[in-house]
Length: 432
Length: 147
Image (cartoon, rainbow over all chains, first blue to last red; front, side):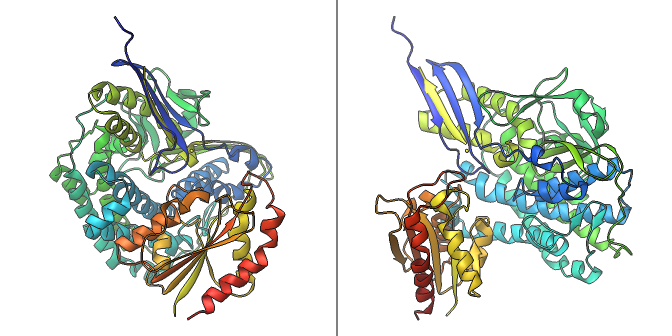
């Protein structure tokens, strides 16, 4: 009997993801020997360079971790600093933070859904080919994304790495009329997001489900974005300050990002699927209606359908932005004083890709002594590898190039932001 | 005539800094320069409907370091491997292709590529590339002045 044939499928540089990563899959005959999802984006040592800086600088410094989701870093850092200093943000400033976050959800979700992920389902190499055939949809997505960017610019001063947010609130609060001016475009965006949802829900999805442990924020009365307790589908319900008692980060040699596990559970999933599973009943009536129309139950365990959940969340973000603008009154003061005091504070918010957790220790002068940042993609790494194992086992009949493509698609289900997680994507499938 | 200059590259990667360095000189002269670290959908808006887009980037073709290459497109695709010196997954060539697919591409695109020799993190530009900066800046201005 001859030795079974070995195959290796590798993608040295994964396209349509943020940052640089790779994947290796090694098969002996039809036996899966190894799966590795590697992140080789060089580490950037943000946690070290925060030490010695002022507590007020953390939001602007950590915002540079990502050009797509800077608000996630700004908001988590602000929450943490406000927590150390014992400040509760007044409701109107909290609402404004949530409003700009809605802009980030819209621009980030639409970029991934329409430009990066949709081509996978339609057999296109990327957005350019998609635009040639479906110019209408790409135009819709671009305008929708711009609506999110505009919201970020009007509140944050600019779209990428906004400069108007600070510990304790904002440097300047927008006027009512500045926000009102955004309403017509946001109303259009809400309808366009419904159209986007119907479009992506019509894709063909590989038949694959996993019994994930979902982890996300939950906040009574609202779909959690800028605050909440950390909860899981396995029964966890903790304050954000207790995170490190339940979650462990481990360094894995092949990756520049740390792998996270939930104690007693193992790998877990953060992001749209998790949020939806934990809080779908808290979505706005319109978002719930659209979710029901496209056949999403209360929980979705098919990671390929995350594109649909992302679209539903886009509907929600537009809807929620309109609600917040309708209720907006310009605060008398755009920020509250946050006086430093020695201690440790924690902040956690729902970045588009999942929870983004920060911890800072500061002294009485407000100097940062220690910092720890856990971005969403590093938390999802282990689940991505498990999905790859499941998907490859199910797809061994596929020719090499289709199998490789299916694997890349599996990774893109998570909208991985590799630049955030490191602390380049490469795909290899090896058949032996 | 509406025209814009876009510079690509990283200041921290040796000769890849040539785009940003030319950008600095043009800005000092009062010109506005598009920074292509911008993500592609925003760049798309910035270049929509232009008569001319001048792109400055470092390239690698085996020529002498400091050599200035010039490519011009009147609506036909630029060579796809133009993204070679870009560290981004979605390069300028793809962004221009997307603009073309959407009917938003500049009427004319001129790419000025400077031959680089080293691109390592933290390295300085090679002397030949640094010496080409004046000529390159002048050439960008000449391109813009041409009707």
